[in-house]
Length: 287
Ligand code: PDD
Image (tube, rainbow, N blue to C red; front, side, top):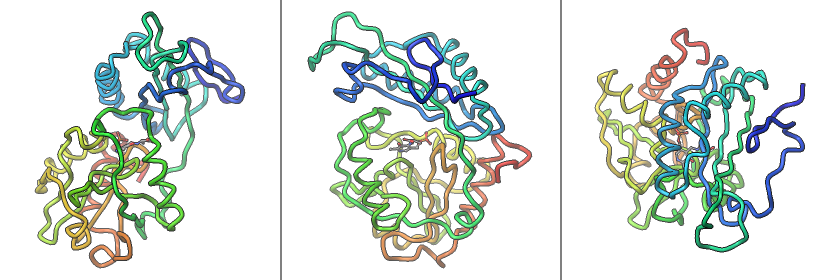
């Protein structure tokens, strides 16, 4: 069975799946997307992802391409047909196909594309060692709360990290505070054990992993502060980690050229990772 994609109403072989050259997503990045993790064959926090998709679309005045229940049926069916056990479903909605013109076309139907990707959970070695991030200036627009497909600054930052031998880039605003990672949310644990992550304003994407982890931290009785932190504060932190749908909770052990804390993944980070995974895999199946 070839891997399938869903393209505007049809399940097609992924290999040859195409969209129109005048899709506004292609010409203007006029669209939004979601990455929904899949574990044990099930979509994780699907309702929260669909809430965010609806919100992103509303902010850009793009209609939902189909009812929410239908979207769920399509994504489940695609995951099932592709035999997806662990990985993610990618969904993208653009304003649609129209002759190139910056202003919104009058009558156009939104275009919907879905793909799936099988992925392995993070390896033992990566989790034991933690990853390195570098800091780079945040050169993005001012509506980072919208999950727009316009990701060029994010791509440039991730490439810079990759070329520096790091796994992620933390984006730094003009005032010296960290906003988030190029495709992840940023967290530190202070020397006195307080967890700090930026508040979900228009400055950052309100990650679904972030939203769930805020609750998990409270349930674990940990102290959480939602506020900006500076690069200097991150250098001085006891622990650091990032969150996203594809990483869950990932320990960071180096920021730029400095070790974080004792250079090993932190205790609170490990506790949060386990507690987060337990929200969708109570048997701890994913680690
Ligand atoms: N990225 N911040 C940014 C800029 C992101 O692109 C993402 C997600 C996150 C974390 O959000 P969540 O916890 O909902 O995955 C934060 C996805 C995974 C991506 O672009 O591939």
